[in-house]
Image 1 (spheres, rainbow, N blue to C red):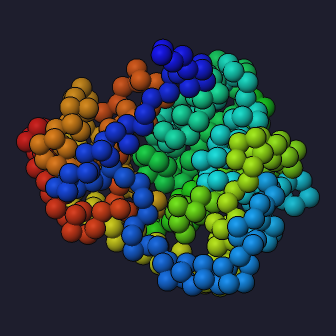
Image 2 (cartoon, rainbow, N blue to C red):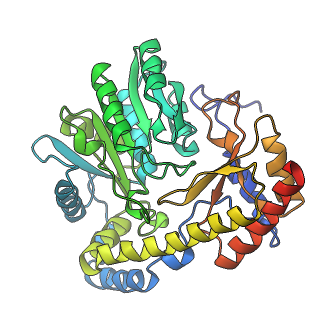
Length: 397
C-alpha cells in the first residue's frame, strides 16, 4: 500500500542525533553525542525510598487518573518557588504540569499558531522543539547568535519582515546546542522588541539550575510586565528525564487553552512522576542536591575543555559554557563538517552531533558540531578528546 502522510508530518525527518546514536551500539565508540544527565547525578536511593513510600501510602493516587492541570501539591509548591524567584504572578498567571518541557513547546505552538504564522527561533536551536514547531506548519525563521545571544538587529529585521510573528523561542541559559548564555542586556533588548512588535516570548529554561560558573542572570519571565512570556521548566535535568515532568508558567488565559489542548493529547502527566517530584522536593534538601549536580558538571566540563585546549588543533574554536550539558565546536570556514563527523565515528570511533541537526533549514550552512560532557565517564572524556584532537590535527594542521 502507498501511504500518504499528512502535511503536518510529511516533511519531518528522523533526528540526526538519534541516527548518530545508532553508531554507539558499537562498544568501541565513545559517544559525545548524547544529552543525558550523568549516571552519577541520579538520586537513585532517594527515588527508591520515595517510590516505596508512595506505593505503601498512596497506591491508588499513583495509579489513578489525575487532573490535566497537574498534581495540585506539586503545582502549589512550584508556584511558591517560582514566585519567590520573581517568575510567577499569582494574580494573573497560572502553572500547568506537562509531560516534560518538550510538551510546553508543542502546546504553546498548538495554542497560539496557525499554519503560516511565523515563529522565530535561535539559529541553531534544539531539534526537538524545532520539529514540534514544524509539525504545525509554521513559518520557522532563524536568527543567528553571537557570544551574548540572539543578535537584536537581526531579530528586529525578522520581526519587521514577518508581521505575523506569534512566538519568539529562546533557550537563554547554556543553550542547546551551543552552551551559550544570553546576557542580561540582550534579554532586556529581546523583551523590548517583543513589546514593540507585540509578540510572545517562549522562554525554555531546562538547564538554568545547572550553572556551575559565573553569575546568575535574571530570567526574561522576571521582566514580564504585560503577560507576554511563557516560561518552560523541567525536572529532566535535575531529577530524572524518564519521569517526564515539566511545567509551564503563563498568563492564566493562555494556560487554560493549553489545558484544553493537553486533554486531547495525553489527558494528563503521569501521576507517579509528579508525586515523586513533589515528595523529592519535600524530603530532600533540593538546593543541596542542585549544588551536587553543579559540582559534577563543573568537573566534567572543565575536564573536557582542558583536554581540548591541550589536544585540539588551534584552528578549532569552542564555546566555554558556564553551565548545562553541552559545548559547541567550530571548524575552519569552508571545511566539510559532515565529513569530519562521519570520519570521527567511522574511523576514530568518536560520536559527535553535526551542527546541521540544529539548524532551522537544511540549506543553512554551519561548520560546527555539538559535544556533550555530562554522559561519558571521566575516562571516556580523556580518551575520546585525545583521539578527536588527533583527528583535528590530522585534518587541519
